[in-house]
Image 1 (cartoon, helix red, strand yellow):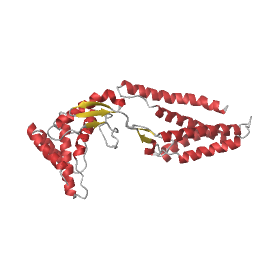
Image 2 (tube, helix red, strand yellow):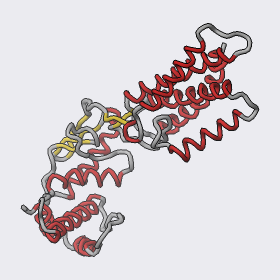
Image 3 (tube, rainbow, N blue to C red):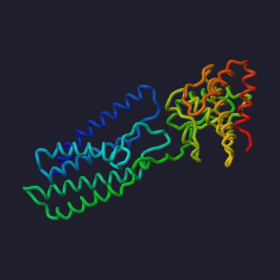
Length: 328
């Protein structure tokens, strides 16, 4: 009987949650975003709805009052918004954005579902124990066990903050030639591969005669060593910038124990080169509008070089590249 009552509320509340979720997915798909929904996010939310319902029923049975519902609602809101916060509790989490190379932790999901099952079982057995009409034999011991198990699982549950996520297993990427390199993306982004190839070709053209292109450009998260890559999630400008970093990063020299002055010279040579390359890749004589910390006087040098004939620009860029790559 208690489970039937809980199910009735769980159906309409979960339906509201899932309707909002599906509407978001549809709106995203109609804008041309790649990929499809990942079911574990919806399961994550629905399990939270059911857990909250079970907890509410439990409190209502143990502390029956006309004010219990309001107190529980306000108390729960205050607990998760002020005391714990959405990133420091394994029970609550607000997902604004996850990169394609991470997913919700399977370990955390297993714990979360276990907690939900124990909470529902505790609600049913304690409700049966508190019922005036019938007291099921063994409800007291079962209610105590499931209540204790719920608390133990909540305390022991992994999943605070970054532990909610795990890196996805590297799948077979989708690749195509781009300039002198191979360009690879996640299978979900196969339709956007031409966009990545176009960006890589622009970067390669800008770096011609200055830096050699890498053999392979990969989307973020595809490399087994965890190294970065280009991203497709934040627009054309970010795609160009991250592809450019994948071009320049292997050529940067980092020297342990080097003097601060030498390190600074090497760093500013790299900043000049990257700003020049990005402007060229974008087909502009204006520098990309980034906020840099420290001295930004080097930007005037790049603007001056961008106004020179192409041969002079390449000659200066080679000097910056040499400064960035200089041996220790």
